[in-house]
Image (cartoon, rainbow, N blue to C red; front, side):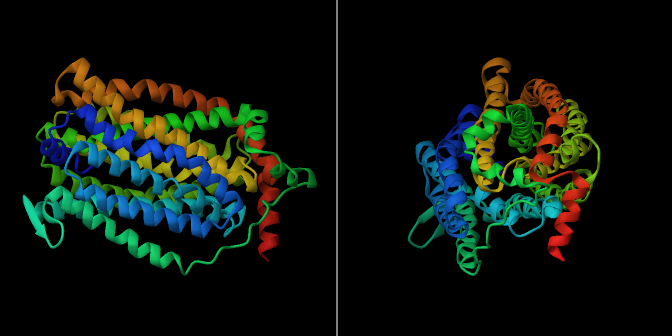
Length: 419
């Protein structure tokens, strides 16, 4: 949808507000509805099968996006994509957490997110190239004539069906308790998710709040980067998509390595906040990135802002679910991750691009001023999110020690178990 905002809005005669609904609200309706039930299933049933079902559903619904010919049809298809993707994060991260030792979790999860970033880069870069080569319309057997943006959606559904077949070769790993420093800590998983969130609110509230606000900023900026470049006549939609995609792939690798290496070192250090300091790094980088993107008057400066923004987003995306796994007991991780995904989708993916669109359509009343809309929407979020992160550092460290033991003890215990 990031790449196809301009062609879809022109073909279906959509305002920025309607486009933002396709980006966020349509996807989030059933993503949030099914997110927690999928998290519950992940904590109690075979995670491979939950993930397999999700891949099949979202691939089929992406195909329906390509066959849509009205705003309503595309909206409903995007709702279906949200249903399928609701299974991905809780199932995948629960599987990963049982395949590695706790002190290696940061690198494992950042590698997982590197794959997601590579996929995003391929989608926007390759999609931009395909969009340009398809021209105006294509005619395919059975479905008839399709616009280039419709054909691109149909092609995007194919890899998911291949991955679904590949998932059949994956074996369900046994569940392992987190390495603990005491028998008392091992009893933590027996509480329910509601009790966990309520009793540990001094930890969970600032952690969830800073992560959700971070993603609000990320979606608000990312959702309108390509239209920003096109509306300021820096370059075409296809060229902007290609540059953005290449930036995500290249910088995504760097950010994933940064999060994995630096995050795991912070987790094993004695510094208060440990791995959570990565989110502070993200917020600090957001400020110059947003200013360069929104206030520049040349393509070169705007591209510099884009590169910095991509690095900021990649840091937080690769780190945030590891933070939740650090503070949640094993048998609650699927639900804890699902709850974060729900709030990230509702507030980040839905409100982020939508607030920008509302400011553009109803306050500034000029699509060319989308950069100013991004600026006034995101800066308050940066301030509030950074404050929440700083407030939560101490309690986050205490929660990590309760689950896994002190940093050096946890690492030693994990290495002994591996040996």
